[in-house]
Length: 168
Length: 168
DNA sequence: TCGAACTTTCAAAATTTACTGAAAGATTTA
DNA sequence: TAAATCTTTCAGTAAATTTTGAAAGTTCGA
Image (cartoon, rainbow over all chains, first blue to last red):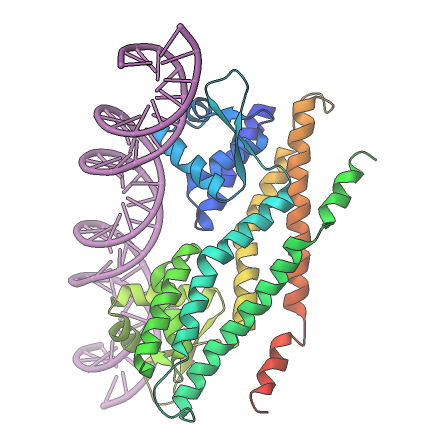
């Protein structure tokens, strides 16, 4: 397999994985493209490479920047904006997990808290089991949340170690 | 808030969370419904409660069973089939994570392995950086995979402890 | 202040995904 | 074996999401 072909395959597969996890195909593909590109790319280059429209490119690049895994680069003397992806996979994964927690899990936790305020006899069998289930979900989420925060905060992640091995 | 209302809210919110994670709304809602229902429910009851068609009910219940978080219950003397959800949230979460890994992540890992077989000079800067990135993803995935397997296999999970506290 | 070069927006169109309902299939009882 | 009861399938339809492309907006040098 040629390098170009391998890169294309990688982009395609990253796109599929993205859709399965609720991320749109194009966004995942742009991310993959920037991951395999050494040089930062302009909107025009991304459009040409993935054969997508200008609007689509713009929206998804912005979204990737919101997630904190792509950043805008300005080259001196160039009018165009260029984009580049965070290359450390550990950092990428942690940013994504952290962000999803903030955007998706936390709002649900707020609702769960409200659902525990139920009118009626707290000793009633049905009410008891409902509150207990909600509490279980909260406990699980808090536990998971703590675990993630711990990982994200790690100064020295496992990855730094493995990366150094590449230079023997 | 009344208990019935709280249950409905829970079902709605679970549905939203589901879609954000790439699971279809109805499937998540049926799961939520069975979670808050003490008694196993028949297809007809699920249909009535969520106002969905028979076909939709059948397909999503089957899918939930494939995921191993809902099971079929046969009541003696009853012709109908009833369904009930695994109530231990820890077990539910582990099954889901394990299953997604198997279905979605593992196939991608197979592809990644193939992508490393690139024609050309392995010392070429571009080839080197590409292979190194693929390797990084593999390392990360393997590490995460091991972590999950470890958690799933734990005989005594934290949750059992917190559950017992409910009985003081 | 103008206009060239570029970015952003968003309504409409295209695509993808989910749902319905009727028909076929299965299982049990008589 | 037939009828009754329940489950499964799937083609067609509906709904949701994504993408396009043209127009509006922005920035900057002259």
